[in-house]
Length: 142
Length: 142
DNA sequence: CCCATATCGATAGCAAGCTAACTAATTATC
DNA sequence: GATAATTAGTTAGCTTGCTATCGATATGGG
Image 1 (cartoon, protein in one colour):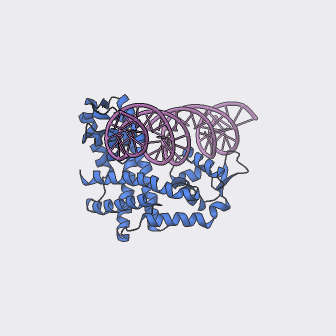
Image 2 (spheres, chains in turn yellow, blue, brown, purple; image 1 turned 60 degrees about the horizontal axis):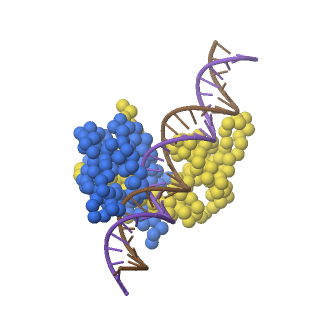
Image 3 (cartoon, each protein chain N blue to C red; image 1 turned 90 degrees about the horizontal axis):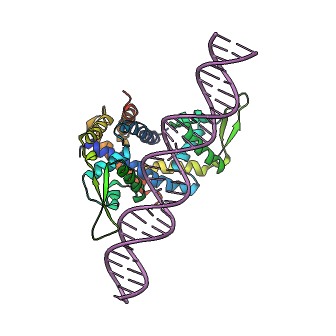
């Protein structure tokens, strides 16, 4: 197996392990990998609309919609009407989502994920991943 | 944002772009990323049972079951009874799946994905991904 | 031999990604 | 000012991951 096929296999394995592991871990605080990401991203742009948040997250609005729905149901965020435009709804984190437990959890997991990875390699790893993402985005487009 | 958080974000982005791009591209031959992977993995172990193939793919049997179902429906593989054990079914690729078009397609996409990634960096990227996968697998386990 | 246990595969149900298509509301154009 | 075009959000439906559970078949211990 050529080196890049092996690397792709590993990449796909990372995805699966992330889902299995992160979701199992995040269950402690009532979240999932994706929902935690919604919260941490919204933390930097409270008051954003769903479309803005979806864009920041790099996911499609219908995908975000269900997560927002679940997060609102579970008391992590709330949607408020925006005056002047009846279509839009501004998103805000709840107290619960602001709590130290959540941010501590997210930080702990991220740290744990990269444990044992040589810091010096990170920029190169990052650059390679960026390149692969860009290549994937271009697949069958040109 | 610390470097490893940024790298995690990029990793998640790769996942999303891979789905969007690869699946769009694979649609030409009637496949998806995951289904193409089922075929290429089975190519190296024809006659395997579903449990064996699922293990080789690193996915759970119920996940594989639906893919096998779809691939059988679409004429890419067939399930044959195994004599001596009525529970098992052996999996075989069809002519269609063996066709040059499929393998050529898979190879082309894999090449395209890694275009512009420095070959010299690959071992380090691979090692880092392996480490992250292992860390993810251990999350909330210890 | 029989019952307990393990294994294979299938079913059901949940999460999260996508696209396509729709409604309601706003903005732009004539 | 009426109509056309765009935008926000939703709905519906598909794929692929997961876990939990179940039925049927093998296998092993007593």
